[in-house]
Amino acid sequence: MIAPISLQQLQQRFGGELINGSVTFDAVCTDTRKLGAGALFVALRGETFDAHDFLADIDGKVLGVVTEKAIVDSSLPQWLVADTTIALGQIGRLCREQFDGPVIGITGSCGKTTVKEMLASIFGQHHRVCVTRGNLNNHFGVPMTLFSLAPQHQVLIVEMGASGPNEIGYLCGIAKPGITAVNNVMPAHVEGFGSVDGIATAKGQIYTSLEPGAVAVLNADDNYADYWRGEMPEGVRTLEVGFGHQCAVHADNIELDARGCASFDLVVEGVTHPVQLQLLGEHNVHNALVAAGCAYAAGLPVVEIATGLSALAGVGGRMQSLSGKDGAVVIDDSYNANPGSVSAAIELLAQRTGKKILVLGDMAELGPEADKAHRDMGKLARERGIDQLFTLGTLSAAASIEFAAGRQHVQRNFSEREALIQALAPELDGNTTVLVKGSRSARMELVVQALTNGNH
Image 1: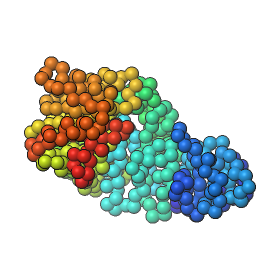
Image 2 (image 1 turned 90 degrees about the vertical axis):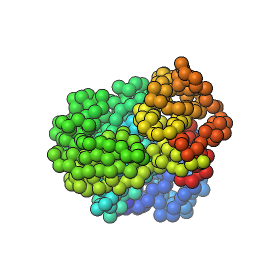
Image 3 (image 1 turned 90 degrees about the horizontal axis):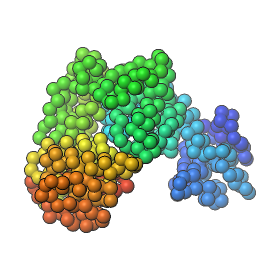
Image 4 (image 1 turned 30 degrees about the horizontal axis):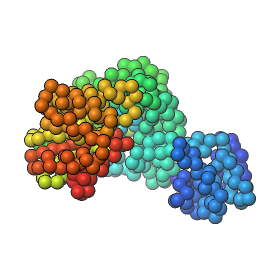
C-alpha cells in the first residue's frame, strides 16, 4: 500500500460496524494459510470455501478482521459488513485513491494478458510499474493488485476479466482507469453472458465507465467497434487502433520470420518505428497495436513503445516455442482457449514447415454453441492443412469428427490424458511441430510437460 488505512476510515466511508475499536494496517490477507501479524484478514466466501469457518483460532495472528459474522470472545478489531467480497473491493478502492499516476485497464475475450505484459515491457524501461500478476483479474484479483501499489510505483496496469454481466463495470468502479481498451470480443464464456452481443455489452463497460478527459483505445477492426463508438461517454477521447491506415495507430509492412514471429513498422499518428516481436503469430501484431495505443495515450514516445514491444520475450503458456522430445518443436499455447484464440493458433501452425499436429483440449463455457464451435475448429484445421488432430475431452470429439470428415484421417479423440500422450509420443521427430491448446479446465499444460520432459 502507498499509505496505511484504518478500519475507522473504511467504516466511516462505507458503513458497517466496528467491534473492539479500530486498527491501522498496510497489508491485506485472504488466506488463513498465509496469515501475517501485520495484516488485515478478510474472510471471503466462495462457491467451495468459507473463510469464516476458520476465524475461531485467528487471534494473535493478524491485526484485525473483516467479517460477516462477529467473532465472539475475541479482542481482535473487527469490521462487520454485509458482504466481505464487496468490502475487499472497497479497501482496494481506497488504495487506488492514494495513487495519482496513469491507470490503464485492459479487457477482452483473448489476448488481454499478452497486451498487459506488452504494456509492462513498454513502461518498465523507464517507469516503476504495478501490474496485475498472473490471472488475478476478477473481483478478488483486482483488489489484490491495488493492495500491491507502493510509493515507488508510477504506472498501474490492470487486467480485468469477467464471466458475466456487470463485472467489468464493478471492477472499473474500484480501479478507476483513465485509459482503457477492449482487445477483442469473441465467443468466450458465452454461458455467463448469454450471447456474443452480451459479451460486447459487458466488456464495453470498460468504456462506458470512463469519466470526461479519459481515453478509450478502440480496436477499429472488431465487429463491435461501431457499437462502442455509439456508447462512448461525452468528453472521452477515442484513439483508434487497427490494421487500417485510417487508424491513428496501425502497422505497415508485416512479415513473419522463420520462427513465426512478426516484424512490422509501427505507425502512430504519422510517426513510424520498426518493431520485431519475439512472440509467435501474426495475431500478436494486433495485440501490440492495442498496447501501443494505450502507451501512446499515456504520453510515451513511439520509439520507446517500439523498443518495449520488441523486448518482450514471451508469456508463459501463450505461444511459447519449446524443445520437445526427439527433436520436435512444441508450441505451448495451453493457458486457455476459445474459438478466436484456437483459430489464431491453427493459422500459426499452418505456416510451419514439416508435419503439423494440433492437440486440442475442450473449450469450456461456450454454452449451446459448444458443439458447433468445436466442429468449426476441426473443419478449420482440416482446411488449413494440419496433418493430425489429437483431441482430449467429450466436447473436442466434435472437432475430431469434423477434421476426419471426407479424408483418410483417423479420429484421435481421448478421454484420458495419459492415453493421448502415449498415442502422440511416436509421432514426434525433428520434422514435427506440435501445438497444444485448451481451456484451463482441460489442464493441457500437463501434455506440454510430458512432451518436453517438463523442461520449460
